Image 1 (cartoon, one colour):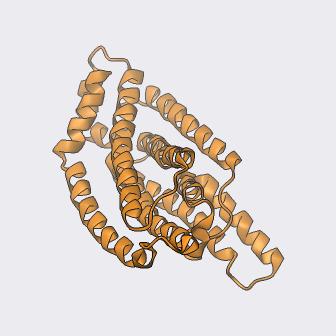
Image 2: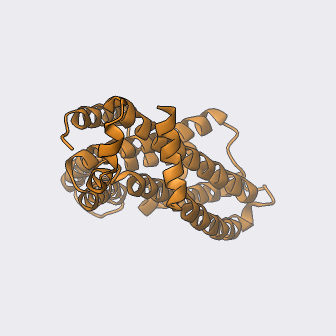
Length: 278
């Protein structure tokens, strides 16, 4: 299994996917540094704590709005053809003829993707926090920071698990479209929840929008984890930018659901892969 994990890392590095991602991330962080410097310019004297708290929340919301997209699309486009693509090229058939149990190949691939993309997400999380701290300070509640980090990383196994399930059912291109639409549905559900509170509509309409948003978020909980993470990290102050982090944050029950979703997707994908004919 260690060989399969290592080959997954080597494949991502050989295809220069991680290199391109790191280069674009450096460019983003440079722009984010300038934005954070501009937004936090009035808070450096430290006299107005409320202003500093609000500006810090705004900077974090902007940073993780982008960060959530980067991690999601890296997870999707690195694994969308892991099974169907290698099967179409004949690579998988040659590997599975060796005395390697199918479950070991699948689990090794899953661990490879989750570990490498999780490491990238960890570095991105730390970079956003450090830039925010440099320009607007950061909360000293390290418990909130650790919880936020776990929530941010939690989107990775959710996305990888769902993408590998899709790769057992669809072609590479088909699964790429499927996962993009699925993530888009979850993101749309979060956006509906964000904007419903600022729309001048009747309470029954708001309730309907809330139900629609919740159902869409259940289809793909990755964006919901990101919204919960931002709420914890900004201590609820993210509503200063309602179209980014407004609305009610996902509950603790939703976080448990996301965990069950990731486990179920992993188990379903493994079950389908073990029974798939190549």
